[in-house]
Image (cartoon, rainbow, N blue to C red):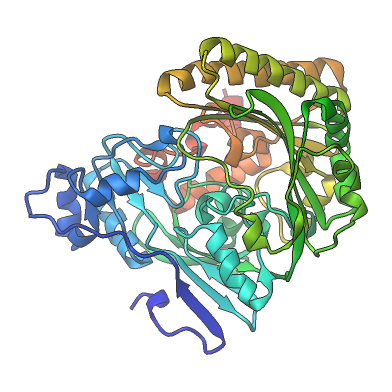
Length: 515
């Protein structure tokens, strides 16, 4: 029996929050030839072919329209055992596949595959809170708003996404920036164990204990999908009853003050770690203008925290802040769906000149997009988030991760520049423009500010062309490479699962230096 289908501990609560999609029972002559592998493995009832209504429904639920790629078929396992069965079938047949959890990644091919098979983990969506250990087990197909909803019954929360529709697995495997990161580190730093299905079908428990694959435990913290398929995450929780927060939006005239506040955020958050602000300078089609939005949260429910006073003193065109819950804030900060998205990211020193340059370049980007899209029906986001050195100190206390942020010589700003377009043709135009814009900012930072660019590239915000794993540094690349080779010697997750950022695509410096 799968461990999650058995009775839970008497003081735990298990809840299956998503209703399973209706899996259509098809005849043995399925339109998708690859489906025969799952029929032979006994998974016909979990397999969706393009002619099934549920197939179309699942494809329509990707957050970015660019991610809907029409795979040959979709398999929806209900447990780690069924993931193992599906994976062994694919490997034995040499079939290419993708892994989907929440379906929120902006980049094409990260969580879907054209002509291959998508393993859709949406039915592995358990949430099990254990009051004794104050930990929660979460299925990879769950989203964060449902996790928060369940945990608030016990006055607890967890280091999950600010956008409640984001899926659990992708967020944690890429690192994960949460409202409580200045208190608990990255989301991945709060994982205490994983359940992982390996390429050969074995199901293992991974934790910091030496007899539970401690080497993989470290590598999974930011290492993406290079090692196996995670079918459960166990995370530590913290007490959280009420928070104070919401949207606080200021007009374009206040942007010089916004720049100043953004550049000082790392020091502010270090001093007031219960506060956080996501600063978004954005072109909104409804106004056909640029505004600055602050997503603000004080995690202890304090209304007048000094850490947020500068932002709240700005002139406001909308202010929804109030005493609320983490769960309710997730509805405030949802990114609109239905666009073709382009995201590029960088990390730089929190210098006011670099922030000002980023804002200037964003304005230039908006002008270029307006010239290409006369109706101006697009959105952009120029986002600044604090990365104080404090976070790396918290990561170290939790045992570390492989992202290499601790190498930063100064406090930093995590930067994201995005364009949300209506058509694929517009996306292709925007992609080159956003890439060029970020390179312009990095060139300015390098030439103007000593140590202006910081090396880390955040996987969850990155474009597929960005060298995420290489940005982690040689030491961490070596760890990821060795763990991948140990647990996946046939390179299944390098060759048959092309989505995500692959360690096999990072140059092996040791090999290069040997020539």
